[in-house]
Structure formats: structure tokens, C-alpha cells
Image (cartoon, rainbow, N blue to C red; front, side, top):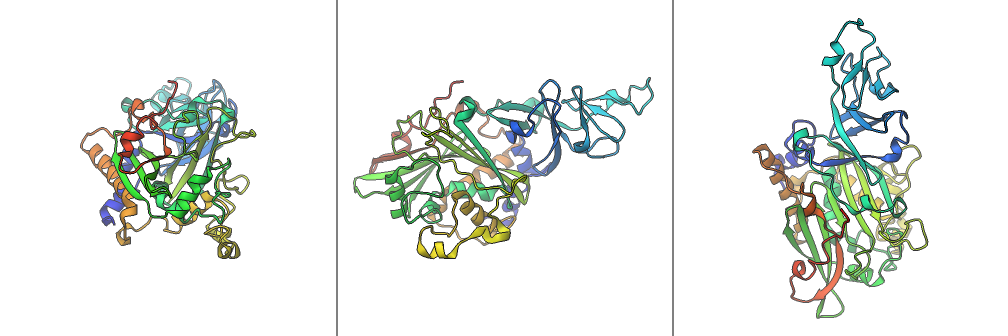
Length: 429
């Protein structure tokens, strides 16, 4: 359990909060490129870390990200005209370039230089891997973009999903850190995770996670976050199955692939994160990539399967208002453990049912919650450390060239030593 004060620190991410300040030191996946499909296209609204913003792509294909409200009379710039390398407020015609500088003020006298002294609050954006990344921290502290593998594959070899979660960002992250729930929440009558993966899963791995539901956790703190090893028994007494997840600051979980062959350096990869919209809502992201095969092709090997969305929204069709379309007959039959038909939906139901902000002062944690406990401590320490002038972890791009693996090792060996060569990612940068 956490104290009320630490739970508050962990979950509050708005401006001028310790956790909010820390999260703003990292590049944030804000939009996908298709949200702004062409120069001078209509702007879009977006909310990040409690801030209402508007994004646009200018005539030179540069992306701007502003405070939604014009600094003149606070009208919404969402209604602005995107034209000639700037976003023009339709209220009085004030125009701003991607840096936020006012470049035209037609409502003022021609001789006025007032525009030179007016800026709208803006954030730097970079575009890579089909994602528009935003940096909301101090400009002088801006790091390099994180070298995640999906940024460097052909667009046909990656998929990105998004959906809104009605809960604090950390609830989603904790679910992804929790390897033990695979044995229950995502159980199917067949060992195939038919509602969870898009490719053909390794049957042996699924049998193990279903049969052995009490993994032993070993967690190693790293310079980028932590390495989470969940060890399960196998039918061979001399062998242990390790599901090794990477937690990369401040919200990424690299999910182990279905294959039990860790030598597949060109194997498919998956990564999730939950980005705060505000303290009670988050955007769930999933990144899936295969260095070799197109995801929509016949050789798809990834775990991609996105829940269906209500058209024109990021709200899933199976959601809180309809009890996630739970089918009690399917649940009773054991075809799925939950009566739901998608693994992302199952995670969403569990995290949203904790409430907008989980009350961690009332929880009872066991040994299977080791990764969650350590993850909280890492985040709290980083946020508190930043207030003392310490640099948050995970900002060095070299340190996060890592991947997650599933592997069977001999009993009694050190998983981080035996698997260390498998856990480094060959990223061509």
C-alpha cells in the first residue's frame, strides 16, 4: 500500500506538480502523423498532462503545439485558420508560427510592434516512426528522441493503436508490469490467446502461463527503469520459464514476444504506454513492429489486435457504460476466463474498475506485486529527486536500446546474466 501523500504525488501530473514536472522531461507520444495529414490541414485539439492544447501542421510541414487559447482574449485557436506558415485566430486575426511567436496582428495599427512581444505558450514537436512527439519540459534540458525500434522499420511493418482509458495513467502501467495476471485475466480454454494476439502464438509458452499461475518475481533496477523477470515452473523440473519485461521510464513497458527463442533478434516486438490526458483519464498506446514482415501480410507475427473503437472517437465499443460487453455464458463455459473477447479490453476493465484514481491506501499487496512496488518507488524517487536538482533516469538513448524476451533457462541460474545478450536491442542508429 501507499500513503495518501505518495499516492497523490504518483498520480498528479498537471503543471507545477512534482510528477508532472518529471514527466515533462521526456518526449511524449502526442499524436500520430495521420492526425495532421497534410500541410495547412485543419488543427486538432489535444489534452496532455492536464493542459488543453491545439496542434497544427504548417505550410512547411512543421508541427506546432500550442496552448489552445489565444493570448489576446483567450478564444480557442482550434477554430483558427491554418494558412501561410501560421495559425491565425479567427477572433481578431492574430497569427502565430510554430514557435508560438505572433507574426501578424492586423487588429493593431500598422506602426505597432506589439506583435513582437506576444507569444502563445508552445511546445517543441518532432515527427518519427509515424508518431508526433512533444517535449513539454525546459528547452535547455531537451533529450534525444527515445530509440525505440518501431521508429526505424518500414511503415508497413508497424502498427500503432490508441484508446482512451477512464483512469489514471499509472493504473494502466501497473497492469502491464503485472506478469502474474496473464495466467488468469487472459486465460482461454485453448492455450491460444485467440482474443489477444494477431499472429500465431507459441503454444508452449501459453500452456506454461496457464498451468503455472504463481510466478516468482525478480526485479532489477536499471539506469533506464527496471528489468522485471517473472519465473514460472515448467514440466521439466530442471528448467524455468522466464518472462522478462522491460520498464523504460517514464511509462513504457516492452512486452515479451510469443516466441521462446530469444535468439530471434529480428523477431516481432510490442510496447505499451499510458500517457496522462489529465489525472483521471489517460491515452493507452500500443506499438507493434516486425523488422521482417508486414503486419497486414500473411506472415504477421506480432501481438497486434486493437479493440474496436466507436467511429470518430478513441472510445472503445466495449467500455464501462456497457460492462465491456461481458458475456456471462462465455465466461461460465471457460472459453475465456472473463467473458470478454479482447485482451486489451480485459486490461481496460480491470484498471478502470479501480476508479478514476485508485486508492492505494486500501490495497493488500503480495509477493507477485514486487514489480509494481519497485516501479512506484522508482517513479516517486525520480519525481522527488528532480525537485532537488537530480536528473531523472532513462534520458540517455544508449541506455534504452533494450528489448523484452521470453526464454527457458536452467534452474538456479541468474536470469539477468544468462539473458543479458538477448536483452539488448540491435537498433540501427
